[in-house]
Structures are given as C-alpha cells and as structure tokens.
Amino acid sequence: MTGFSMFLGILMGGSLGVGLAFLIFGSLLNRSNNHGDSLGENSRYTGGIAYSARIDKSLHKPAAQTEFLNTYYTPLYPDPVFKNPQAKVVRKMPVPQAPAMQANPAAPVSPQAAVTAAAAATGFPSSTAFPTAPAAQAVQAAQVATVQAAQNYPTPPAQQ
Amino acid sequence: MATLCKNCGHALVFDPAIQKVRCNQCGSTFFAEEVESESKKYVQDKKALSMAEVYGQNTANAVKEYLDCYIYTCSECGGEVMITGTEVSTKCVYCGNPTVVFSRISKQECPEFILPFAITKEQALACINKEIGHGLFVPDAVKHFTPESVHGIYIPYWIVDADRSEAAIIRKKTSNGKSSTITFHGRSGKMHLKNLPVDACTMLSDESSSRLEPYDFSKLVLFDEDYLLGFYSNSSDVTYGDLSRAVENRASKMFDEMMLESVKGGTKTIVGFRGSTAINPDVKYALLPAWFVTFEHEGKHHTILVNGQTGKVVCGLPIRKALFFTLLTITCILFAVLFSIIFYHIIYAMMSSYASRPRRHSSSSSNNSSGKIVVGLIAAGVVMAIAGVKKIKNVLAKLKLTQSSKTFNFTKKRQE
Image: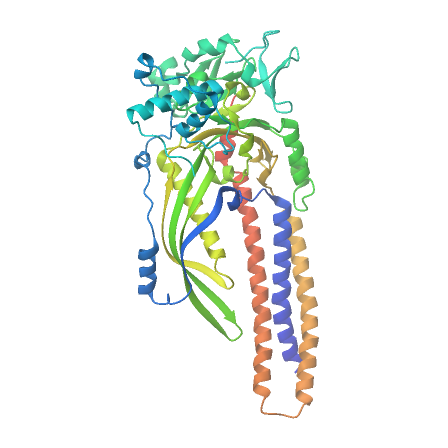
C-alpha cells in the first residue's frame, strides 16, 4: 500500500509541480523579456458586429451548416480600384476643377455653406477626428461640389 | 533640402518637446506650418537621380545592391547623399543637415496627414530604460546597453475604413464530469471598421509595425514637410493587393474573436465560414512616428521600437539562459517533491481509511471518483506545463523579431 501511494503521489505531485513551475516561470519570463506585445484593441476600430442571424440549435448536420452559410452570408464586393492588385496604392485626389468653372464661376457661397458642402464633397463628416482643410480649400471644394452637381459628376460615398 | 532659419540661415529641425521647428544655432522657434522658404519652391524641380543615371548603367548592373539607390545632392554642402527607393527625408552624411527630398513626393504620393513626434530621443531612451531596467531575466549588458543608433522614423500608413461580412459555424465543446457535449452555433453579420492603420512600407514587417499601435489619430495634423526636418521618413510602396490582404487578415481576425465571444462557455472553434471584406477606396495616407533604437549583444543586432507618440516600447529581449533554466529546474524539483509528499500523505490516509472500513457494494463508485481526481490532477499539470511552454515560445518569437535583419536594415541603412 505504501509503494502504491508513493507511486501515485509522485505521479500527481510531479506533474502538478512541473506544470506549475513552467506556468510561473513562463509568465515571469514573458513579463520580464517581452514588451509591447499587444495590438490595438478591437473596440478602437469597430463598434462591434451587427448580427443578422444567431442560431444555436439544429446545426449538427453538415447539410444544415452548409445551408446556414449559403443562406445568411451576404457577400461584399471590392471597389474596382482593388481589382488591380499589382498597382501601387495612391491617395484619392479631389476632383480637379472643371474648365466650365473658369468661364461661369458659381454664385458666391456663405462660409458655413461652403464648409458643409466641402464636408459633403470630400466625404468627411464634421465629427471625424481628422483635421479639416483650411477655409480657402473648403471654399474651393464647395465650388467643385457645385460644378459636380451641375455636371452630374459622381460624388464620393459619405463615410458611415 | 534643408529649411533654413530666417534669422541666421542655419538649418532648422523639428523639436517634439515644443512641437515647433527650432534653430539649434540661434534658438529661434517657428510653427512648422508657418515656415516659408524659397528653397521649398525651387527644389520642387530638383530630382534625386538614380545610381544608373549618375554613374552609368554598367555600374548599376555590376553592383546589384545599389539598384534601388538614388543620389541626392545636398543643397547646403553639395555632397552626394545616397537614399533608397522609398526614403523621403534623411540627413546629409557630410554636413549633417536635415534633408527632405521633395521630388520624391509626387502629389498622389504626398501624405495627407502626419502625426508629429511627441517623444524626444531622450524620452524614448528613458522609456526603454524604465521598461527593461527591472527585467529579472534580462542580461545586465542589455539593461545598460549603449545604443548603436537611435533613429526617429516616420512610417507611412494607410488609414482605411472597411466593412466585413461573414457567416460562420462555431463548434463548442462543453465538458461536464464524465461526458462532454458538442454543440454547433451559427452566426452571421456585418462589421464596420473605421480608421484602421495599415503599414504601407514593405521594408518593415507588419508584425513589428502593428505592435506599435495604438496611435491617437485625434492628434493628426495636415501634412507639412517641415515636420520631417531632423527625422527620417519613407513613402508608401505597397500595392492594392498588399493592402487588401493586410486588411482582410486583420478584419477576419477581429470578426472571429468577437463572434467566438458571442457563444458563452466551453472550448470554441470555427469549423466553417464564408466571408468577404470591402475596403472603402477613399483611403487616407498618414505618416506615423516611431523611434528605432539598435544595439548589439553577443554579436547580434537588436532593434527596439518605441511609439513616437505614446512611448510604448516594443521588443523581445535576450534571456539570461543560465539563470532562467537553473531557477526553473530548482523550482520544478521543489514543487514536484513538495506536491509528491503532500499527495503521498493524502493518498496513504485515504487508502488506510478505505482498508479499515468494512467492504460495501458502493465501493466501485468511490474508486471511480478517486481515479478521476488522479487523472484530473495529472491533466491539470500537463495543461499548465503546455501554457508555460507557450509563453516561453512567445518570448523567443518576439526576440527573433527584435533580432530581425529586416527591421535592422530598415533603420540602419540610413545616413547618420
């Protein structure tokens, strides 16, 4: 009985002792020698998932799982600019001032209307954390927006 | 091209401590946006020439490593400054004046925003000393290292907005005493990502740059060349394919993490999914600051990164192996002996009391539960050991990243 107790004691105590020692020293080493091992938190970049389906039953069969994936998946399609994977990424520049602008300048705009129109034209909502362009650029953007509207130029989608 | 002080004509540099450009000669300070210089205007036409243009095609062919090098003539001393294909600002190797190569920045490649350095070189070194100074397993030579070089580099980033749509099947295993239950859960939905920074420099590994996060984008300012004075910087050289892959990887990882959190309890894995990510083409181009501090230890180069805005230190450090393994072995033996003695006594007492009791029919269930305890404790030991080994492997992986020649070359191959 003593021998068997000793065997079990060594087996259990040995595994638990070695395991605990590895865990403690692994944590100590990580704390001591690994710094800044974290990415930005998810909440910094997203407000979370808007779920369209949550099913917790009847998905045991592979056929049901496939059907779920086919039914509830809504594909998103990349913008045409991403269809050329070899091309270098470049900034999207503001739409150049149309020649018509020179001949028939748009009616004068108020500074407030200019800023609103500039925000709409550049797709930057006023609440964004990014700095806004100087007033002169805002007025110019407003004029561009006026020309765009007159000539039915496509406007960039507003940011969500 | 150096921007000169309008009071004394000496070269200006950007000082993170006061967030202004400063003349080290006369002490004058100016806001970066206010600095007007004639030199800025004429240098628009001044081009950096490729090695082949300067020394002939044969030279470029003969010396492959110079293929991606360009020659820029310093406007202050006339010295030839060698720069790589994506460098935008550097220092003249002869006169030490800060140099911004404007001709490299075409309109579409010119950054929209810049996050100026908020941490000075001295503060960056202080952050490192504070962080690594108390490490138990950090060699003394590393704790008191002498930096080989300290470079403040603006890293180009694309800041993107994107949407991710995904449907997935999650398998959950719940252990409940004797048996375990497996259930399947379906989740589908959409997620919007806003202002996700993606490193736009192929010379720097994504893993290194992403660990520098987070940056506070509310401090971004409109780009002005004078913020680059005294610092190094690169321009973007990634393709739409690179950008898509980086965003896809990051978005799917985030989505999966959040989706797994929505299923409570148990051990969860995603066993099937369909997903896609669409990036808003209106990407924003910004330069974000980082300090790169290199040092040599036991013949290997190490590069410590410091976030130039927050002072976050990113590195994996060399290990005092002798100390670590000695302490680990001693602790293993001590714990093993201690637990063995404790368990021996517990088991012996249990068996003695069991032997002294009259035999009953229910003894088999008692045996079963004792067996489960034995197996459970052994399993707990194995799980803890695996978790510990994973942590050690993680430290070694990060050490490898700090010793990466790619990061070292990114910072070292610059004019001092």
